Image (tube, rainbow, N blue to C red):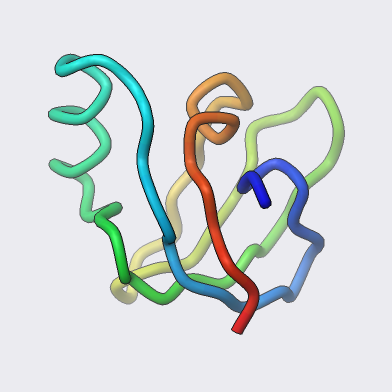
Length: 73
């Protein structure tokens, strides 16, 4: 499932990342890598998605979150 399909308080792992080199450099620089556990904090439609991972709260725009595949834990 895509990160945008998760619900608040859902825990899971990053399964795969898809995008160009610029996207991959940005997303991995903030700690989002394959296999990393996360928790969705907030996922309101038309708003940035908030996830908690690596002891950090991260806000992602919806276009970036669409490129991230996750699996439920």
